[in-house]
Image 1 (cartoon, one colour):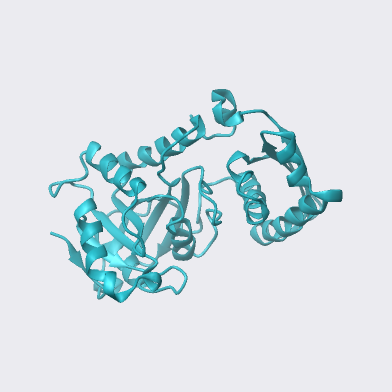
Image 2 (cartoon, rainbow, N blue to C red):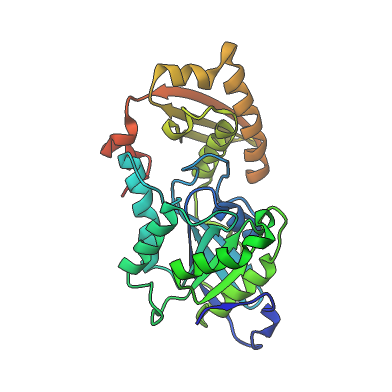
Length: 316
């Protein structure tokens, strides 16, 4: 039976127990999944932007506190795909279901359910996770409550709970930080009693070179017009450490010469701005001086290339 709770406390977990598990975070694009994971973990494990398909790989974020460890699997937003890349992103999200000890479905409660929300519901039902007898608990996170009109609360609550049939529901605001502690405690309650799955000092299992290339893509997404972001990928081509300085080469891959021109900008202004801000974040992440080289390459229609998708680690 669905319950709404704002009163959970991690302190209510019995002394002596340790709870640990993997939590898959699902939702359509731009509902706040990555922001939620980054905030709860306390470190950036996924880049964020207002562009769809910002998250392209499963990103593991590990929150370890006395008595429990939550390993979040941040997933690409479920959407209606138009390319092989889009289908690969949906498959990546779907593949987390078998690994999860609990599921978080994040929705934008300020809007009615969209087609992508219904697609997620159907995916869960297809995985035999959508009925009341399922063994994997589903928590519905109604995010962006700060944008929800009071008159719409009851109707919106019914629409989303009818769609997902969750075991628990909580409303949150990632921008204001509302109910994040309560959400954390709610998750812990559903994790199995077991030893930590990861070392206490880890907050992600992603290689630093992958995180660096993603930080470059994040800075590009903040500046690009709508026609470029979906066609942009980044990867680290070289990483060298010597005498307190790390030299990193990152390739920005696009599909047309026109997109390349936009990425570089007049007299290289765009590429320089991307590199300057990305370098600052990378230095903060790895704790040393960084010399960052950016290169823009064109590969026509790479989002439809099985080989390129595999090389970029978007498919296995």
